[in-house]
Length: 224
Figure 1 (spheres, rainbow, N blue to C red):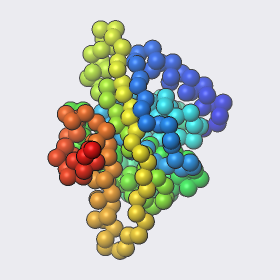
Figure 2: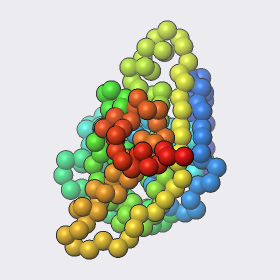
Figure 3: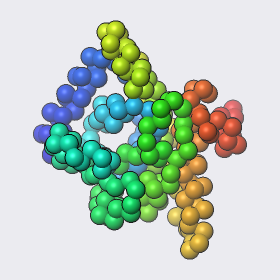
């Protein structure tokens, strides 16, 4: 995204979110230099806008599900923010190559490893696709936990002219081990995906940790 376009777009995003919500931001003081991946839970349609609210960078890379490509407004918006449509159900080689290229150029890639919005607001089982891209590009991962953007909650509060209380919490950035061989790759990607999700879970309230609530790694991360 051009810097001038980014400034205008971010101004409107921040203005709208500031009008409808109180946004608390925690843990973004020491971000990785260069390219990195933000991995966050996905609980509502407002989630995507928060990257532009929190980060003052014109090189945020957002991928958007192919189902939205049929709408002219989304085609315009994705082009405006320099995003990419991705086929979630097939190996989208073009999207993969383009994402890797931009990550290696130093851009920031936002992913939701769960792949879809959690209707309950609690963590659901994640898929390894986005984590594979972080590993392949060799860039750090920043785990981020979101609360307060659940679609039903947003509708309910705005319907009664009440502001939302949104919280965006980042944990320490970390790098995935690089040495993975042959048949071990699938197992390694699953292990790395679990690691990312457990780090997100540890940042969430206990009732929001979902399928990762009893994971041993979560308990290890929460240990004093």
